[in-house]
Image (cartoon, rainbow, N blue to C red):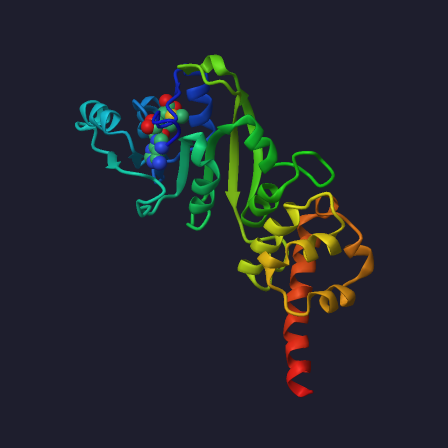
Length: 267
Ligand code: SAM
């Protein structure tokens, strides 16, 4: 929740609501999860096409409005609560105009679940970081983490005027298609920490970024590990490396940690 407002900007433009529902490509077997249903404008349209829509809404006043509006509609279930805390039900698709202050946390909570497709509205700048490419200013930890879990693309930019009240920022609808990572990751937790660490020093050469963030990474004999890693990669910067290359470096560190530990035991 931001400033006690619950991040409430309701999408009221029928054209955009219809385009979002069309992008979800719903069939009668789909169970849709909607996070932050507001007054239910998107919910109503989703329920006309899907088997079931399950909404999670935090604001008790809106939960009451949703009950008044939908209690007679058989295929809408309303869960009152914080989407960051509630256990998600099973769903095949997630379609939401998200509360922007929890964009990152909610996206990675979603991506720990199995689903076919996400059609999600974010603040435009956030969406741009999700879908960026190496060597671009928006290329970031968020880009790499997103790429690890899913294919992401921006479907449309949505102007402030499509909402009521109008937010201060533009928005974008992102299509997320979860899939196995297109590169090998030996230790997911270490890879995530590594990406967070090196992007906190995105303009430093990787060897310096690793050294400077080793309080986070806790790589034993870190200087020796760096010395054994390919020099050309160590001289590049996180912002210039593809997710694939970053995973390769993280995997090599995982291997070297084991190797150096074994060598030390032997001595
Ligand atoms: N989907 C609606 C629409 O498009 O008109 C509302 C979108 S509004 C940007 C975000 C909604 O998320 C609000 O209804 C707000 O009350 C709700 N919300 C905020 N934080 C939440 C949370 N942690 N869990 C569930 N809902 C939340």
